[in-house]
Image (cartoon, rainbow, N blue to C red; front, side, top):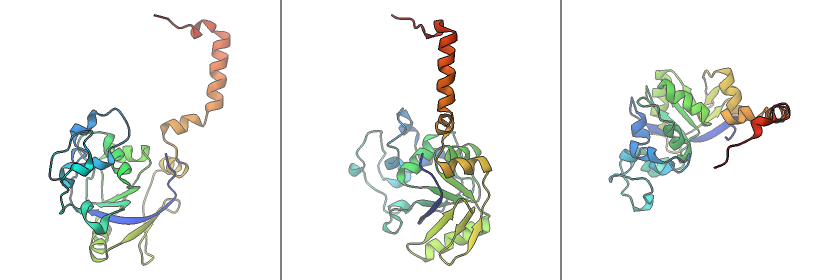
Length: 216
């Protein structure tokens, strides 16, 4: 996955509490066994006026002009500002996939559902938890200033506002290490590729019968 070091991006506000994973990516899109193609269906039931189905051409859909991500001022947003308990509901990993594939690199909210929070880190996205009062101030700033951007510095663990205010956030050291280096679970394992190959070679040399495979 891509490394996360310093990211500056346009902020889009999702001014709803308790946004669940079925709202983030509705259940009909979970049929796919691929890990790609979910971005066009992010917030599908809010984003479109018609019901979406897997494989449908997004260009044939009817966008909801009142939905925040359809508003021209938020096109290209890569930081999502949210309210409390974001990502609640069922534990579908498709939710962070859809957010990341839409183009979001980070979410800022007062609180998250635990499983969603963990899945974000595993998929290269940084969920930042800030005090509710700070989040409310950011919502006000986003509404007041079109094109409002934030800079997120993971190494320093701060969110920097356009006027230079640094808002500190906490992140577990191991998760920080993985994001800074672009390591998902597979990437972490592949750091030991030479040792794995040596172990497999020794195993086959000392127990050659393990190399036999049943045919037919």
